[in-house]
Image 1 (tube, rainbow, N blue to C red):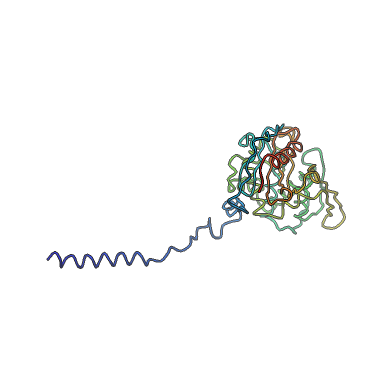
Image 2: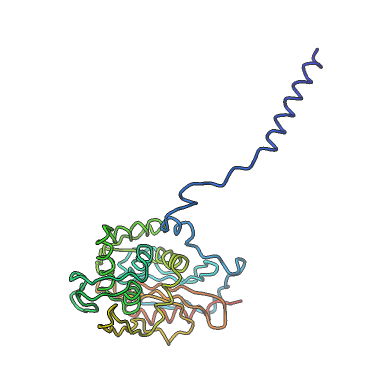
Length: 312
């Protein structure tokens, strides 16, 4: 009797195992965070650039002392491996001045087509009370406003893009903060599109996240910042803008892939620089905040990295 009962039990157990083994694999997720996500959400998923050689990172030569910087905070990273080469209070929240414009440019590329034409309103002229780079009523393409904002650090151009967004019922600064949040920039809070408000702060670690996002999500932006000067005409051809770069290291350090300057009385000198080491495939990101010698500090960091590490 026991043997008779055992046979159907074994048969049922075998069927259960077979059913489990041939069960189809789950379908790929259709979550909006993976498929069909908005550009801002997609950028949060992939702000890390793939390493060219995942098993390689430079080795520190302790015989070469670290540089002494004036900056209140600094960060130097080997972008390919993600290795931190130098760090000084990289989690310190500070005003970042016009480094803000990198985020503004990233948001603007999401919101607008490069060939859209913007009419400059009165509220976008001489917004800092000092330097006027735009004129009321002139018409410029979005791509030209981006170039003015990134090359000569035009505050007027940043405000003109924000005003253009407002015409479409879009709060540009809210979009900036939303984008920063999706990128994991938890230390950052932005108050205006140009970085004029020194109560807005960020730290060097989160600025590195921003640089990675720009390089991945809007790769055309960084090369704009390598132009020493540009000539930009208004859409009707009547106005000519002579645009000069605020980055003094262009032509001084070789291999510069891009960067952004920033300065206010509260933030002091700030500088992001992306550099490819001469004769190597290695890329460095240098971030200097709160410095009275931002160009000297950055130059010292890059030069030290070449000597202070053994490169493949």
